Image (tube, rainbow, N blue to C red; front, side):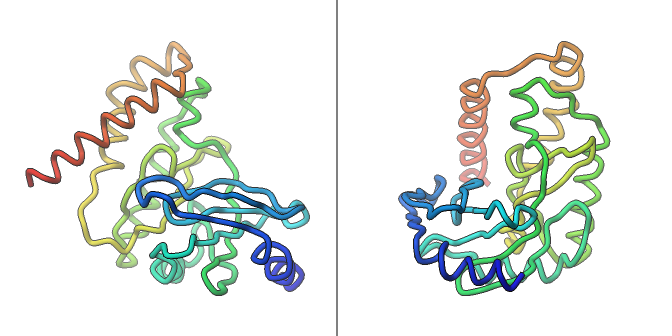
Length: 214
């Protein structure tokens, strides 16, 4: 771990360039120093890994984006659970996390991979575990949950301190049982990304309308 922390300070933090252009879209990563690799980007932060330490990832918040202290508190409350990552170290505006391996449910639908009910049940149980620790699962959608070896994982917990009610996971479960299980799963249909993106955009639009009318 000490060597990883040293590499973060000497290579990654000094060479990476992250910019938040729009709070509703993923941050832009303009430069990544060798041999670090970009694993993914969210609305607040980007995630990187070093090939020599592939079981850990580094999550760096973009300048001016909130949420770092809140996410650190979420991981403190979660502790150790098989469906969640763990915070192994925290520095100024970055977290070192245990890496979770798997395929997002979003990508499973695109690839035609079968999603067993056990995955949904695992995520349900993990979210109940989080609630028991005073957290409020929020923004749990197809890109924030994964499947590995037929089991469910929750990838993003950054918004779990928000008090606002969120129906994203319940909506995804309804789509799973009403559409995926009877239609997509038996046919092993592969849904193009552009179709998934259109469905996602329509869903987000209607969610905003519902919030305005509440």
